[in-house]
Length: 478
Ligand SMILES: [Zn+2]
Image 1 (cartoon, helix red, strand yellow):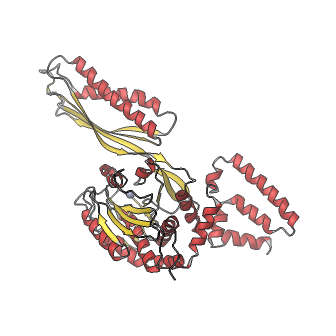
Image 2 (cartoon, protein in one colour; image 1 turned 60 degrees about the vertical axis):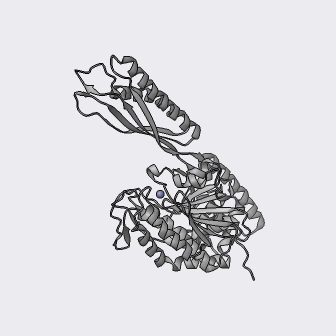
Image 3 (cartoon, helix red, strand yellow; image 1 turned 90 degrees about the vertical axis):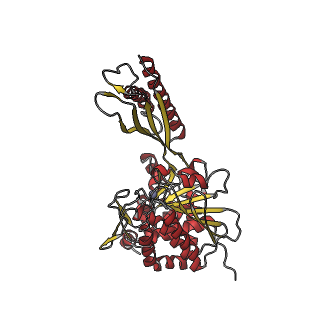
């Protein structure tokens, strides 16, 4: 072929190979040069030139390894490509597409079952029925409320956890009726994470109907308590040391195909209350004042927190809500606040939390020293959130497989940090990744949340491929 024909194929071709080439310009140029070599000495010369070019770009562009997905080892890329053309997987892929309408119906059905924080049972019950009906060997609900469907493997050496979260951020009484305008579905929770549950469910059904058998056991899970004050309670239970936790965790939450969450953003949250007797601002002057104590405490906290967060691992702090008191001429009986601290690094999070607790005590003690009459002030620090952080090496087989199975769809993946159910296993060093639920969506955590089934089957196929790659495809029994 002539150069312009190769260019046309590489630039406009619609195969995974051409899409990979387009996402990596240096490889594209190298490929086009190779294509024009007629003798082996010409190829050798070009190979040398392009190696030098790769090296130069790697020096000039520090993030080159991310841009070119060099983190992906060739062995895993090959494994994923081979698996994707296995006849059983091809059949399961076709089913994932055929089940498009069924998936949409399940999405609407599950979205319309309210699942406020701590009230996930009704949605969980229906999810359990669907797991049972479409391929799980046994289904149960654990004492925390997680709904778990086991699909047995052939070898049963390991257990692969694969789930989305049942809960939404929306309180009881929120109208969760799905409204359809054109191809857009509107409803609170339609994307986050009801669609995640549907990805899990459809992957199960496609595997079952295509007769895909795996070596390892797979748990298909609807997890409780991911959002807000749920504080990852479902995952904390699943991965508690005393329980039989899965060996790896594949989580479906968040947007499109390219983002793979392999790093957890940790956070701690406190509700703080300073309490005193309260009284008249003139008549009882000299009593301890909770507002004065808390103001001092916040100031002492920020003095040190500011220096802690300027360098090193990214860390943040925020006094989000403050309240208390009854009137301008009353000494408040209570002053309270809610505080959020986050960090990429567990040690930094521990440090800022300790600084925070010390500052609260200092505010308390100093106000008590200024007391002229009445009982002393008391302090209550209630921890209302504790999400562990951590990160995983991209060389782990699970992460490699997540990169490789995403590349099969012509998408160059990026490794990201976020706060998801995967935080819990990641903090324990258990391999985990959060993959996207597919389609297009927006306005999450708001009543105007929407989702469009644009190529939604791709996310189901990718999830299925990753789960099977990790669990190991068992040979069909002949
Ligand atoms: Zn979510």
